[in-house]
Length: 156
Image (cartoon, rainbow, N blue to C red; front, side, top):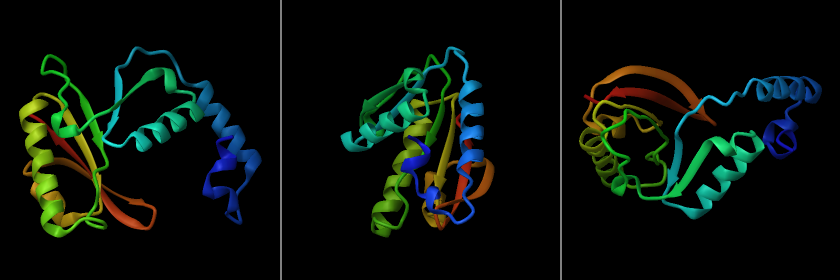
């Protein structure tokens, strides 16, 4: 299922047999370590797609999905979290809106998730400056054709 529904099946050098072997090897290494993974998005459609992807990866029993607005969500300061987010880039929003969004995201990190760690992936270099936090690590990677930064923030 997984291999048949993704674009790389059309790559000229795609090796389906090798893919299946690697995929099954990865799936077999999944263990039942107790973790609390919560996936949130404001869009019901996105949550539905995330559930579908988790089912395909055979990890759906390890993740709680919630339709929620990140800015109105807090999971409590009694725990330390690792937050991983892929906010909108400057590709679809106006500059002022994207800067405001990233500032609000940084403020939410600071006030609701002290002691946690946040990772943000974005191609919006200027927008990332508005998070208002110092990065402890930056990784350059690509999301499709977009060059992105995957930035780590320690939330003290």
